[in-house]
Image 1 (cartoon, one colour):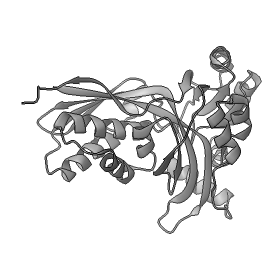
Image 2 (image 1 turned 45 degrees about the horizontal axis):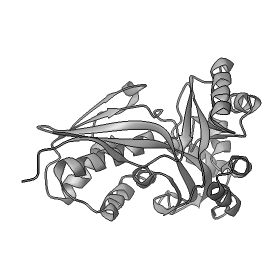
Image 3 (image 1 turned 30 degrees about the vertical axis):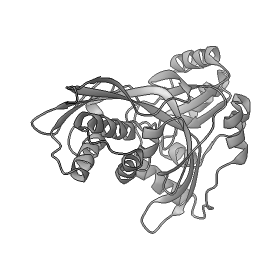
Image 4 (image 1 turned 60 degrees about the vertical axis):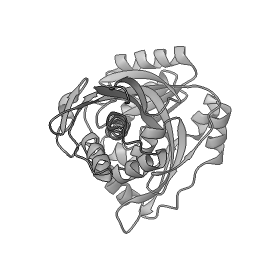
Length: 303
């Protein structure tokens, strides 16, 4: 018996960040776009909860109960009064610690895989509730497509997208701590205004207009990420000089994202970034992508 779920990475085409709240979080207007880079999470029965991982940078992935995949299995098991006896194998292809929600994707993937394996029959709303408990980006990993996240990002309003957008992601040689980036944001922006989604950006998504989207993308965390990781400026410059319509830090970084005119332009930008020596790798992906999806299941027949 096993269930495999495929779950996408994300890019934030707008990340508007408000002042720190009393609970330490920040209110956000976070426009998520799921992109076609995927992790796969496979759940199989086991004597106890166990996490394994393969793929690029797998050695950086925690294999204990701090992993969001493990936390997802435990949360679902607790809600349904069962033990979390499952082996979760994560096949990584989303950059690790790169601001593309790879860990959140694994949490959403594990949740959906365990729900199918155990036959818990949780509703979509129940799964989204558990996702929100796990982390701010986890609900979007389940939903995919495009969405506006408010609150700390977990309250989602799905958005219409009128066409495909072509992206290049430059993987940095090094990592950034999301809490450290937010602390630097607080230092640099002591009087941050309340966040709001850009109507111009939402219109560009709805129209499928890459040029209009390029003019509207923004990330309030980018100055903080550049302050902590100045070399990212060279990567952004290399992608822009190679013809990208827009260049920005993805989420809290350090992955940088480049919007291209079309698929051929994306390949050219990626090749230039690889040759520039300013990043460890460059990956091409289209958006929007489907959210967490069961792609393989071998389950016993229902009696």
